[in-house]
Amino acid sequence: MDRYLEAAKDAAQKAGRILRENIDKSSTIFFKGTVDLVTNFDNQSQEAIFKHLSSCFPGHDFLAEEGLNKEEGAGFRWIFDPLDGTTNYAHNFPIFCVSIALERKGEIVLGVVYDPMRKEMFSAIKGEGAFLNGKEIKVSSVDDLDKSLIATGFPYDIRVSEVNNIVHFNNFLTRVQGIRRCGSAAMDLCYVACGRFDGFWELKLQPWDMAAGVLVAQEGGGRISDFKNHEFSIFDSEILATNGLIHQQMVDVLQMENVKV
Image (cartoon, rainbow, N blue to C red; front, side):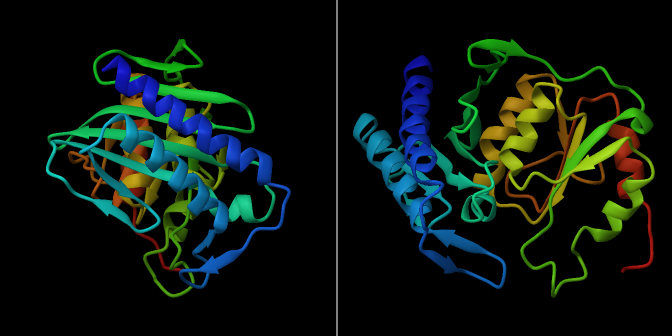
């Protein structure tokens, strides 16, 4: 697995360099929806990752955000987001990352999340722990929701869908120490893994948003489920990630009903 990890790190750094060196330059922005956008640097980053990994592992499958779905039936599939936090990037807000995961026969076995602005490389191999720049990381020890710092995000269809996370946000707001909305699910998951956040929930994410970060969080000692505390898949529409100690407390809040606002 080590050679796959090194290749993923190299690919993430190549893509991250493109993003870091161009963040203050004008981006060509394309709109996939009212608030769902993509820049030309998303595409450049994706091409750099695909070129590197496909040259290292010809025949591997690929699934990525910007329209890449290459299937060779090799048993290995790279699932990646070349720029997680595109809206931040387009506004020159320096919170974004490159997220790369390797799936083997349906199981995520490797994950890399690279923050090029802080040069933080989160990584994990299944069963071997989670690391930040080579140093092992662990989730926090906060066991009271009232004392927790948690994170979330909002779906791109927030303006038109009633299932938009606002009710959950309101329910958590007075029950925690603070809520952060960074705009990058992969980084939120890694921040759970290293104890910066105690919990994270979101809905309507895509596999490439979660695949790498979920493994990093799990290997850091975190717990992952859907909102009802059922078994999680990266193809699910809900994700709850915590340090394990406040997991049931967050599940309880997520099951509360409220008037939609």
